[in-house]
Image (cartoon, one colour):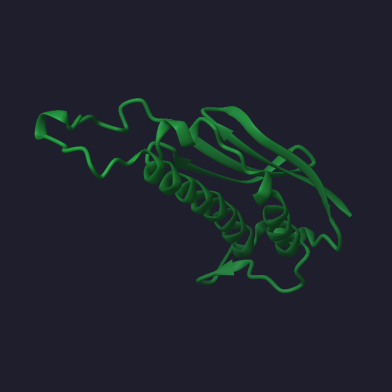
Length: 145
């Protein structure tokens, strides 16, 4: 068994951190394409959740009966002060994979109140299955990873 952890940050502040073990850990999987896909799948799970919460937030705050005039529309660069999420997978306190994605596509209310507790089991399962796999790809276009 090998000890792992994943950490979700926003602007370098920890949102969620979990420790867990991987049974049947295969050390060669650390340098595989599947490791890269694993972190992308985990980020995708989080982004789907944030999108769902964004849709709920927008639906609750939408008033179809109020008229919106052109002067009421606020036009601004949403990336002027960017909020950045990082998802990191570590083992033995060494970073294996890290993926960054913007939070500015989600409303402030959603991105500043991230709650991924319901996602933790699926994130851990994704990581455990990836790093305990027997078959994986360590070569891409004839180049060793």
